[in-house]
Image (cartoon, rainbow, N blue to C red):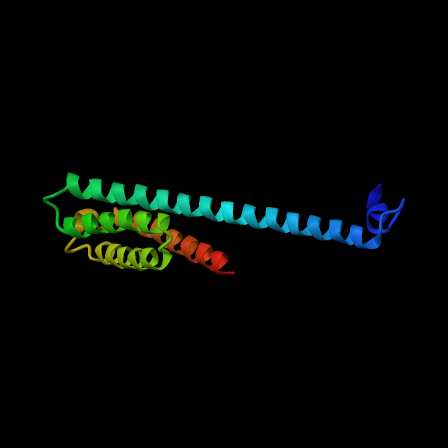
Length: 148
């Protein structure tokens, strides 16, 4: 039939009928695109929550395995905060999760830069801090997309 046959009345179809079809089609496509965006956002949130959970568990295990080292409390606390951030992301509490990630980022940056007090964990925390910076960026992007 082609686009010309769809837009212009033919064989007894009225112009209003064609306009209704076009309107319904555009509403259907808009709904389909919007549902895809929402589905994508929920997948992104789950991926971020899973990454927070993984990093938090890793830090908690690192702290438990090295209880006699200085700064173990900071590492364990950071792990717990990351695990809590995962729950907050899943619960759609993005701002609180973002605040937690900022706190963890500052804590790990302090441990990484404080070699004299935290010699064991100082170099270990840098990769975690980089991943958390990436998580913060992704969470900000996701939050910005969902607010638009």
